[in-house]
Image (cartoon, rainbow, N blue to C red):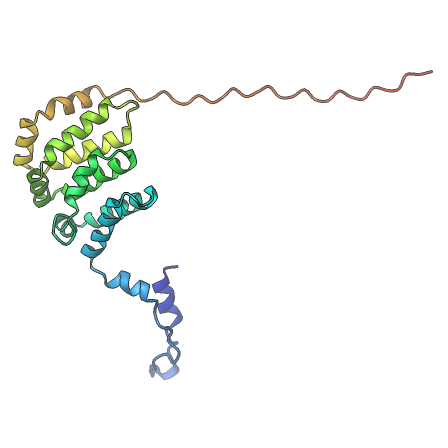
Length: 220
């Protein structure tokens, strides 16, 4: 159960007969950690997530979790508009993250960008102003040339490109056209790279022969 909900239930006094309500006499103080989580603005949480992702000394699992958290926050249009605000300063790290050596981080940076730009003209414009169209094109072109191809990363790069082009974003479409992004995108959609062959399971060894039945002793 959510700790905050548990605290509220444990400290809720029973309703006395007659309707007279008295406050609880032994209320336990709420954990400060949960108060900080409740009261901290989303922009501050986003800033912390960007800082964790940008710290290359952090374990990969922590950086991945930070990007997952960041994508959760930018699902809100207002939070997405704050991604490039000086308080958060997260849009440039996400665009640059399209070239991160780790496929897990490339995937999540593209996913954050795609989610933030979806039906959000302000973020679309900010990405264009930061040269994001060219970097998105480079992202899926390079991913197509990788061996092996990381299909999940490639799909997220295309998702981010579609988010930039969608919603009637004429400026993004013109920039994508000028950077010659449509030919490789159409080529990818018409002739996607062949998926890797399914892994073959090793052949099962034949079952062991049952033990021989004991022979009766020879008759004298």
